[in-house]
Image 1: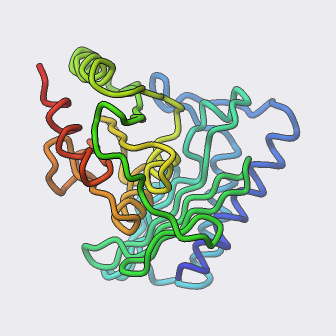
Image 2: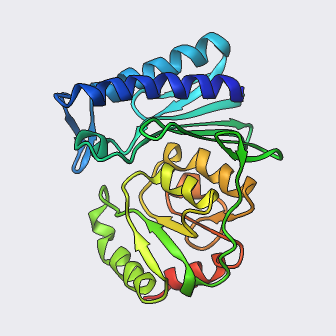
Length: 256
Protein backbone atom coordinates (compact mmCIF):
# COMPACT_ATOMS: atom_id res chain seq x y z
CA UNK A 1 0.00 0.00 0.00
CA UNK A 2 2.82 2.41 0.80
CA UNK A 3 4.35 1.79 -2.62
CA UNK A 4 1.03 2.54 -4.30
CA UNK A 5 0.71 5.75 -2.26
CA UNK A 6 4.24 6.79 -3.25
CA UNK A 7 3.56 6.13 -6.92
CA UNK A 8 0.31 8.12 -6.72
CA UNK A 9 1.99 11.04 -4.94
CA UNK A 10 4.79 11.19 -7.50
CA UNK A 11 2.29 11.08 -10.38
CA UNK A 12 0.38 13.99 -8.84
CA UNK A 13 3.65 15.82 -8.23
CA UNK A 14 4.62 15.56 -11.89
CA UNK A 15 1.28 17.10 -12.88
CA UNK A 16 1.83 19.94 -10.41
CA UNK A 17 5.38 20.55 -11.61
CA UNK A 18 4.36 20.68 -15.27
CA UNK A 19 1.63 23.19 -14.45
CA UNK A 20 4.07 25.31 -12.42
CA UNK A 21 6.53 25.38 -15.33
CA UNK A 22 3.76 26.64 -17.61
CA UNK A 23 3.83 29.81 -15.54
CA UNK A 24 0.26 30.54 -14.52
CA UNK A 25 -3.23 30.76 -16.00
CA UNK A 26 -4.60 28.17 -13.59
CA UNK A 27 -8.32 29.12 -13.76
CA UNK A 28 -8.60 29.77 -10.05
CA UNK A 29 -11.94 29.28 -8.31
CA UNK A 30 -12.78 30.21 -4.72
CA UNK A 31 -14.40 27.38 -2.71
CA UNK A 32 -14.97 29.84 0.11
CA UNK A 33 -13.29 32.97 1.40
CA UNK A 34 -9.47 32.60 1.15
CA UNK A 35 -9.79 28.96 0.05
CA UNK A 36 -8.99 28.31 -3.60
CA UNK A 37 -8.98 25.40 -6.05
CA UNK A 38 -7.53 25.09 -9.56
CA UNK A 39 -7.78 22.58 -12.38
CA UNK A 40 -4.37 21.39 -11.24
CA UNK A 41 -5.86 20.30 -7.87
CA UNK A 42 -8.51 18.29 -9.69
CA UNK A 43 -6.07 16.77 -12.22
CA UNK A 44 -3.68 15.75 -9.44
CA UNK A 45 -6.50 14.19 -7.43
CA UNK A 46 -7.81 12.29 -10.44
CA UNK A 47 -4.32 10.89 -11.07
CA UNK A 48 -4.07 9.71 -7.45
CA UNK A 49 -7.53 8.15 -7.48
CA UNK A 50 -6.85 6.39 -10.77
CA UNK A 51 -3.82 4.62 -9.29
CA UNK A 52 -5.49 3.86 -5.96
CA UNK A 53 -8.71 2.52 -7.43
CA UNK A 54 -6.91 0.25 -9.87
CA UNK A 55 -4.91 -1.25 -7.01
CA UNK A 56 -7.65 -1.25 -4.35
CA UNK A 57 -11.05 -0.76 -5.98
CA UNK A 58 -12.97 -1.62 -2.80
CA UNK A 59 -11.18 0.78 -0.43
CA UNK A 60 -12.92 3.89 0.91
CA UNK A 61 -11.63 7.34 0.00
CA UNK A 62 -11.76 10.76 1.63
CA UNK A 63 -10.34 13.32 -0.79
CA UNK A 64 -10.32 17.10 -0.58
CA UNK A 65 -11.85 17.89 -3.97
CA UNK A 66 -14.14 14.92 -4.59
CA UNK A 67 -15.21 14.25 -1.00
CA UNK A 68 -15.90 10.83 0.50
CA UNK A 69 -16.43 7.60 -1.42
CA UNK A 70 -17.69 4.47 0.28
CA UNK A 71 -15.76 1.23 0.37
CA UNK A 72 -14.51 -1.41 2.77
CA UNK A 73 -14.66 0.09 6.23
CA UNK A 74 -11.24 -1.35 7.17
CA UNK A 75 -9.31 0.88 4.76
CA UNK A 76 -9.66 4.55 3.94
CA UNK A 77 -7.36 6.67 1.78
CA UNK A 78 -7.19 10.29 2.98
CA UNK A 79 -5.97 12.48 0.13
CA UNK A 80 -4.94 16.11 -0.36
CA UNK A 81 -3.74 16.41 -3.96
CA UNK A 82 -2.25 19.87 -3.47
CA UNK A 83 -1.82 21.27 0.03
CA UNK A 84 -0.83 24.91 -0.26
CA UNK A 85 -2.88 25.84 -3.32
CA UNK A 86 -2.63 29.58 -2.59
CA UNK A 87 1.17 29.27 -2.52
CA UNK A 88 1.07 27.33 -5.79
CA UNK A 89 -1.09 29.95 -7.48
CA UNK A 90 1.42 32.66 -6.58
CA UNK A 91 4.50 30.65 -7.47
CA UNK A 92 5.57 30.44 -3.83
CA UNK A 93 7.38 27.07 -3.72
CA UNK A 94 5.89 25.62 -0.53
CA UNK A 95 3.20 23.05 -1.32
CA UNK A 96 2.88 19.29 -1.40
CA UNK A 97 0.84 16.16 -2.05
CA UNK A 98 -0.41 14.34 1.07
CA UNK A 99 -1.78 10.79 1.17
CA UNK A 100 -2.61 8.76 4.28
CA UNK A 101 -4.10 5.31 4.69
CA UNK A 102 -6.22 4.55 7.73
CA UNK A 103 -6.81 0.91 8.73
CA UNK A 104 -9.93 0.78 10.84
CA UNK A 105 -9.32 3.58 13.37
CA UNK A 106 -5.52 3.72 13.12
CA UNK A 107 -3.28 5.53 10.67
CA UNK A 108 -1.21 2.87 8.89
CA UNK A 109 0.78 4.68 6.18
CA UNK A 110 1.54 8.25 5.22
CA UNK A 111 3.21 9.96 2.26
CA UNK A 112 3.98 13.66 1.83
CA UNK A 113 5.68 14.66 -1.41
CA UNK A 114 7.18 18.08 -2.11
CA UNK A 115 7.48 18.24 -5.91
CA UNK A 116 9.49 21.47 -5.92
CA UNK A 117 12.34 19.92 -3.91
CA UNK A 118 11.72 16.27 -4.87
CA UNK A 119 11.48 15.43 -1.17
CA UNK A 120 9.50 12.32 -0.32
CA UNK A 121 8.44 11.83 3.31
CA UNK A 122 7.05 8.39 4.18
CA UNK A 123 5.95 6.57 7.31
CA UNK A 124 4.37 3.24 8.21
CA UNK A 125 3.01 2.37 11.62
CA UNK A 126 5.69 0.70 13.71
CA UNK A 127 8.32 1.01 10.97
CA UNK A 128 9.62 4.56 11.36
CA UNK A 129 9.57 7.71 9.24
CA UNK A 130 11.83 8.52 6.31
CA UNK A 131 12.87 11.36 4.02
CA UNK A 132 14.04 10.08 0.65
CA UNK A 133 14.73 6.68 2.27
CA UNK A 134 16.77 8.19 5.10
CA UNK A 135 15.44 7.61 8.63
CA UNK A 136 14.26 10.83 10.28
CA UNK A 137 13.67 11.81 13.89
CA UNK A 138 12.22 14.89 15.56
CA UNK A 139 14.83 17.32 16.85
CA UNK A 140 16.42 17.06 20.27
CA UNK A 141 15.03 20.46 21.28
CA UNK A 142 14.09 20.27 24.96
CA UNK A 143 12.87 23.80 25.76
CA UNK A 144 10.19 25.95 24.18
CA UNK A 145 12.54 28.91 24.63
CA UNK A 146 14.85 27.30 22.06
CA UNK A 147 12.15 26.03 19.69
CA UNK A 148 11.39 27.13 16.15
CA UNK A 149 7.60 26.77 15.93
CA UNK A 150 5.50 26.51 12.80
CA UNK A 151 1.90 27.64 12.56
CA UNK A 152 -0.93 28.35 10.17
CA UNK A 153 -3.50 31.13 10.22
CA UNK A 154 -7.18 30.13 10.63
CA UNK A 155 -7.87 31.69 7.23
CA UNK A 156 -11.16 29.81 6.72
CA UNK A 157 -12.43 30.61 10.21
CA UNK A 158 -11.74 34.30 10.78
CA UNK A 159 -14.19 34.23 13.69
CA UNK A 160 -11.47 32.43 15.66
CA UNK A 161 -8.86 35.06 14.85
CA UNK A 162 -8.89 36.63 18.33
CA UNK A 163 -8.14 33.27 19.94
CA UNK A 164 -5.39 32.61 17.42
CA UNK A 165 -3.79 36.04 17.90
CA UNK A 166 -3.64 35.36 21.65
CA UNK A 167 -1.93 32.04 20.94
CA UNK A 168 0.46 33.69 18.51
CA UNK A 169 1.34 36.35 21.05
CA UNK A 170 2.07 33.68 23.64
CA UNK A 171 4.34 31.74 21.29
CA UNK A 172 6.11 34.81 19.93
CA UNK A 173 7.08 35.74 23.48
CA UNK A 174 8.03 32.24 24.64
CA UNK A 175 9.65 30.51 21.63
CA UNK A 176 12.83 31.21 19.68
CA UNK A 177 10.81 31.98 16.54
CA UNK A 178 7.51 31.42 14.75
CA UNK A 179 7.13 30.62 11.04
CA UNK A 180 4.06 30.46 8.79
CA UNK A 181 4.77 28.92 5.37
CA UNK A 182 1.23 28.06 4.23
CA UNK A 183 1.15 24.26 3.74
CA UNK A 184 0.20 22.47 6.95
CA UNK A 185 1.06 18.94 5.78
CA UNK A 186 4.57 20.05 4.85
CA UNK A 187 4.97 21.97 8.11
CA UNK A 188 4.10 18.83 10.07
CA UNK A 189 6.59 16.81 8.02
CA UNK A 190 9.20 19.44 8.90
CA UNK A 191 8.59 18.77 12.59
CA UNK A 192 9.07 15.06 11.92
CA UNK A 193 12.46 15.64 10.29
CA UNK A 194 13.66 18.27 12.78
CA UNK A 195 13.47 21.42 10.67
CA UNK A 196 10.79 22.71 13.03
CA UNK A 197 10.55 21.80 16.70
CA UNK A 198 6.77 22.25 17.02
CA UNK A 199 3.65 23.21 15.07
CA UNK A 200 0.05 24.16 15.78
CA UNK A 201 -2.98 25.20 13.75
CA UNK A 202 -6.77 25.42 13.94
CA UNK A 203 -9.39 24.92 11.24
CA UNK A 204 -7.71 22.10 9.35
CA UNK A 205 -9.24 19.07 7.63
CA UNK A 206 -8.26 15.43 8.07
CA UNK A 207 -6.39 15.40 4.76
CA UNK A 208 -4.15 18.25 5.98
CA UNK A 209 -3.04 16.31 9.05
CA UNK A 210 -3.35 12.54 8.66
CA UNK A 211 -0.11 11.65 6.87
CA UNK A 212 1.96 14.11 8.87
CA UNK A 213 0.52 13.00 12.21
CA UNK A 214 1.71 9.45 11.61
CA UNK A 215 5.14 10.77 10.63
CA UNK A 216 5.40 12.71 13.88
CA UNK A 217 4.64 9.60 15.92
CA UNK A 218 7.01 7.40 13.93
CA UNK A 219 9.75 10.05 14.21
CA UNK A 220 9.50 10.06 18.01
CA UNK A 221 7.35 13.16 18.49
CA UNK A 222 3.99 13.78 20.15
CA UNK A 223 0.76 14.91 18.48
CA UNK A 224 -2.71 15.78 19.73
CA UNK A 225 -5.35 18.46 19.66
CA UNK A 226 -4.74 21.77 21.43
CA UNK A 227 -5.39 20.05 24.76
CA UNK A 228 -3.06 17.18 23.90
CA UNK A 229 -5.92 14.71 23.41
CA UNK A 230 -6.73 12.43 20.49
CA UNK A 231 -9.43 13.42 18.05
CA UNK A 232 -7.46 16.07 16.16
CA UNK A 233 -8.51 14.61 12.81
CA UNK A 234 -12.13 15.31 13.75
CA UNK A 235 -11.65 18.63 15.54
CA UNK A 236 -9.29 20.15 12.98
CA UNK A 237 -7.03 21.44 15.76
CA UNK A 238 -3.52 20.03 15.94
CA UNK A 239 -0.40 20.51 18.02
CA UNK A 240 2.79 18.50 17.60
CA UNK A 241 6.32 18.79 18.91
CA UNK A 242 9.33 17.04 20.33
CA UNK A 243 8.46 15.10 23.51
CA UNK A 244 9.97 17.67 25.87
CA UNK A 245 8.58 20.73 24.05
CA UNK A 246 5.05 19.35 23.66
CA UNK A 247 3.82 20.04 27.24
CA UNK A 248 5.18 23.60 27.16
CA UNK A 249 3.58 24.18 23.75
CA UNK A 250 0.19 23.08 25.07
CA UNK A 251 0.58 25.31 28.14
CA UNK A 252 1.39 28.32 25.95
CA UNK A 253 -1.64 27.62 23.73
CA UNK A 254 -3.90 27.62 26.79
CA UNK A 255 -2.95 31.20 27.63
CA UNK A 256 -5.92 33.62 27.47
